[in-house]
Image (cartoon, rainbow, N blue to C red):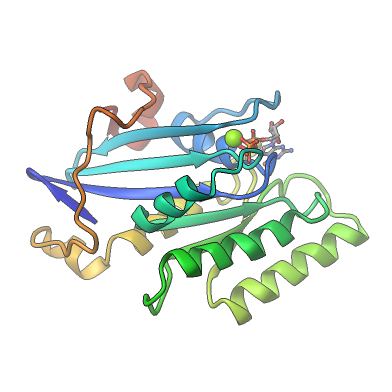
Length: 215
Ligand SMILES: Nc1nc2c(ncn2[C@@H]2O[C@H](COP(=O)(O)OP(=O)(O)OP(=O)(O)O)[C@@H](O)[C@H]2O)c(=O)[nH]1
Ligand SMILES: [Mg+2]
């Protein structure tokens, strides 16, 4: 959590191979819509203010097809909660998550429990024999080996997308401090909302379903 003048900023970040559905998941959550046409991301930022908690949520949408290791490392260090997204329908998709998790470990050495979840996206599409094995291996690895939560989401149908974001919020904001509503711990206090950070501005109406106001 990052504290700035009566506002707490929660930084979420999405990483994963190109085409896994990071952008689609973020847009499904923020806008409640789905775009079938694929447009690869370089790097995007979204932000929204959750009115009741005076909580500013910043979401980094990284581009899986663009490798900027130094930027990724910085983003990993600055995040309060991370979603590692893959698609079981793509061979090697989960393998990318293995080294992304490794990068996360290296970027944040010394932290005992890293705040990340693993996301198998495109659950609307039936698994064949091969993708079923990939999905099972991923779940076993995430839960048993990495001790992380595992979500099977669909940006197309919206299935488990709200649950995914709820988990990210919980990871980033310790519940006890949320209830107190004050004196939130600043794990890595950083200035937020600086002019040099690009942001997507989206019409307020797109956020209504989440009772959010766009900053
Ligand atoms: N059927 C289905 N298709 C999806 C789902 N999520 C994303 N897609 C499609 O998969 C393609 C890639 O989705 P994106 O969200 O752009 O993937 P990305 O992870 O952001 O990719 P990069 O920006 O290149 O890293 C698009 O054509 C989406 O419409 C899903 O849950 N189900
Ligand atoms: Mg994208």
